[in-house]
Amino acid sequence: MNEDNDEVCYCSNCLSLAIITESGVDYCKKCGCSIIKTDTTDNWVKKYNEKYPKKKALYPRGIFEYHKPNKYYN
Image (cartoon, rainbow, N blue to C red):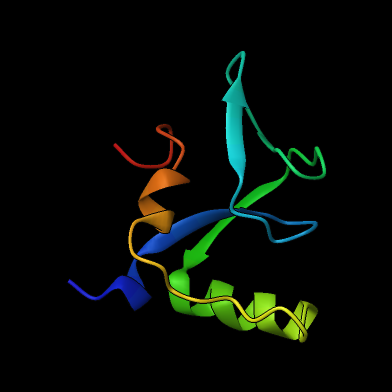
């Protein structure tokens, strides 16, 4: 299994992976946006690095498993 092709859920506004679910609603813990998108890890990293060129997104093991809301991943 290639981590680069795993799907991640992220905030459409700030691209954060800090997505939480409260009362059945997913939202970003950092900015409060409730528009959550999914994409491959590789595509998310490219988007993140384009939006935040001074902060480089890395691929730490396990971080993507932590942020997967249950309703997207059965």
